[in-house]
Length: 220
Image (cartoon, rainbow, N blue to C red):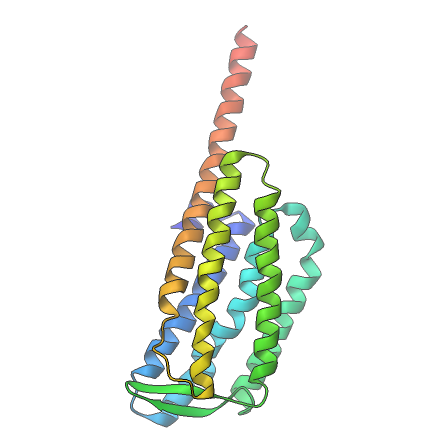
C-alpha cells in the first residue's frame, strides 16, 4: 500500500526494500525453527533467512537518508559500499560455513550456529545501524515544521524499537532465548509505513494550501 501511495518517491522504494528484507528474515527464522530436517533447515537458513538478515542492514541506512535529498546525494557512495559489503557477506554465507557453521537443536526446530566470521558481520551490522540511528536523529533535529518533527520523532522511536530485534543473535552462540525479533520488526515496519504515508499526505496538503493561496491572491 505504501509503495503504491507514492511509488515514484525514493523513500517509498527504500521502504519496500526494508520491509521485504525484514519479511525474509522473520519468515526464514519461523521456517527454520519449525523444521525437522536439519540438512534442509541449514540450506534455508543460509540461502533465505540470512539473505534478509544481511541485506536489511544497508536497506535501513538507505531508508534513513532518503528523507533529505541533499543527504541522499552525499551518501550515495556509502549506500553502494554498504550493499557491496552485504553482497560479500551473503556470498560467504552461502558458499562457506564461516557465517553459519551449522545448527543448534531448538525445542521447535533449529537455530543457526555462528561461524568464525559472524562476529565480523555483527560488528559491521551495528556500525551501519549506528549510522542509521544518527541519520534518523538528524532528520528529527533538522525538521523545519512541528508536523514533520512529530513524524521524525515517531520514525526515530520505530528505529529504537527495531534495534531490540538484534537480540536474536544470542541463540547463534548457544544462548537460548525465544525468537522475539518478529515483534519489534513488525512494529518497526508498521510505524515507518505510517510515517511514509503521513509524510506523503503532508506534502499533498502543502501543495493544496499553496494552490489555494495562489488562487486567492490572483482573485484579489
